[in-house]
Image (tube, rainbow, N blue to C red; front, top):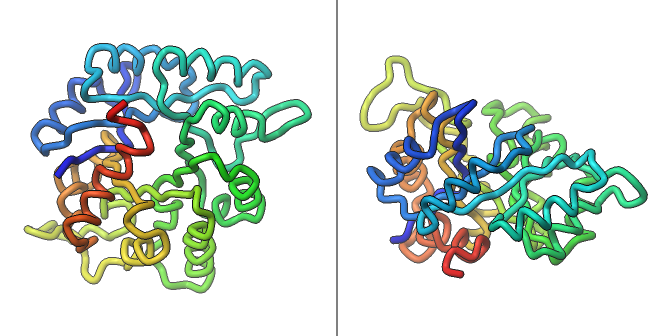
Length: 264
């Protein structure tokens, strides 16, 4: 099975350099990685360098300064230099007459948008209206829509319901990550499963809402190293999703390969 990591970070001033990521990919049988620029970093030159050095392993998802009027032009230049996606936040807006200009530009350039935000932002009417207004734009909601509150309080349940209801839009996909984002670490940590059971049923709810063809796995490396670690974020998530072979291939590689044109 081809495995693609759709959410990993590299840098020299923060986190870790690309060699550390490639080590984790190699030891865990991950074929391709999607470099997702860290929030607030609009200098994408290191990611470009990484893709030039390892074109058969990596692609780059960039960040631009959406407060600038020239952000759409800058995005076009980054695409010319090889960018395969754009990272925005659920409340990102452009200055000027068209607040959705940067989103429209991504759609026109054929770029998928990987989108970060709080569960409240993803659950908002304004975000639903945004994705509905851009049916030709692929929007990938990161981190399970940030519905990582393990409580069963009514407010948390309602937020999860509203976030997973984004599946009503066929252009919205969902990223799943390691169990450490929403499950509680057992104390002491034990093998082979280091979390308190039962874990919250978020993966099952996500699968029921979106289906495997609109889900993709990402490690969130290197922040995941402060949780369960890269290998566990892959293997335990794969085990807990309990998918058939064909659906597992979609979530852990096939969907990402299509969205990011990894065979182009």
